[in-house]
Image (cartoon, rainbow, N blue to C red):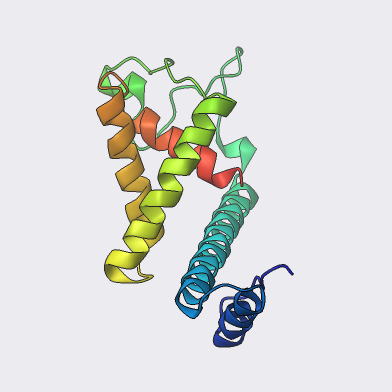
Length: 164
C-alpha cells in the first residue's frame, strides 16, 4: 500500500502502521516514515519557493512600462538613466559565456541539492534550509569545476531547482 504524502503527525502514524503491517520491524517502519515525511516537506517547501518566485516575477512584469525604457534600432536598451551598474557604464564587457545545464547535469545538480537540503534541514531546522542548500550546491559545483564562475553555478542550480 502506498505511503501517505502528508507531513503531519497523522500521516506519519499512518505510514508507520502501513510499514509495520507490511512486516517491517518498528524501528525500520519509523525510520521509513521519518524519511517520507522529510521528502514530503522538502517537496512542499520547494513548491512554495517556486510559487513565491513566480509571483515576484509576475509582479515585476506587471510593473514594467515598456514606453519608459527606450531602445535602440537594434532592440537593445539605449543609454538611459539606469542604475549605473550596466556593462556599458562600468567599462566591463557583458558575460555571454553562460551555458544552460544538460539533462544529465541537471540530474546531478538535483541529486546534490536534495542531499544538501536534507543536511541543511537536519542541521538547524526549517529556517533558510533552501537557501543554504543552494549555497552548498554552488560550492560543490565550483569545487568540481574551478573554472565555473560563481554566478553561472548559482544560475544553473536555480534553473534546475526551479524547473521541478
